[in-house]
Length: 378
Image (cartoon, rainbow, N blue to C red; front, top):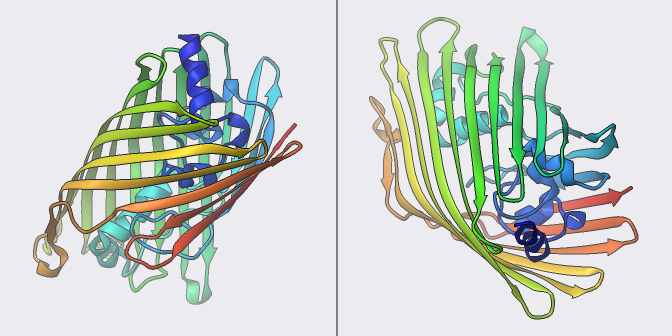
């Protein structure tokens, strides 16, 4: 099985050339991949920090919003270094789990934000991640992500956001398992037309993977979140739950001339329900079943130059949003709208420096989104 994991690293890519730009070019979640070896997998399973080389990373790119273009940058940077018997890591500016929840509600279910705060919920700023892990045959790791920010404007208007997430996990040559717990998450604002808040006092998520031979992997994940969104004048109050379940299979192979090819199939289910307990009774329900297909290639064009490209399509088996009392807020799709996307990337090495860049197609637009990353090994 050690040979299987060694092949995984050889086929999918070296950790020395692993960045957010690389994951974007291969159309993976920038917070970690279930089947592609990358240094950013520590944000998915902190146990993977035990096998990393000491390095510093610097990332720049536009905001990650599914289906929505946003020109503001999601800049971040951090390091991993040996500390005692294990590895210590820190990251500044990563888009955390609670911020992703805020972005989803703002983009996919905007009626909630409009009713509660008269606009959009405000994201947390300047997040901090701390991780530590160790081990050999069985590696372990733990971490926390903290977001706390306040923005005050004229006329006494301000927003306050805070969230604390704990993560932990284990991995070996055969399997991995990990989980996270979100507590005390809250965003409160009166920057819109009304004053309100979004609270998530409890959220749990987890997942894992199992190696099927040297070139195949089975993986899965789940997440459950309970949230409350209420207006301060007590006229609107949503009690919501979000549930996500996913199962996937990945396969990869070596091609000629140091090229690697991969494909992955997934089945994902998402359901978000928010009930308004006040007389207005404008309830929200969003559900989606997708069968994502992703395949790509990564090749060494020269000893110092790597090329990569990928294509992804979320086969939408069913997407529906219903808003009781607001007819314009409801829709239903089956395998629509089009969301096929293509991404390209390039990476290069110079001594201990590694550079990556990627262009990712923006859905429903005629241009792309750029990502640039640099890693320094020490």
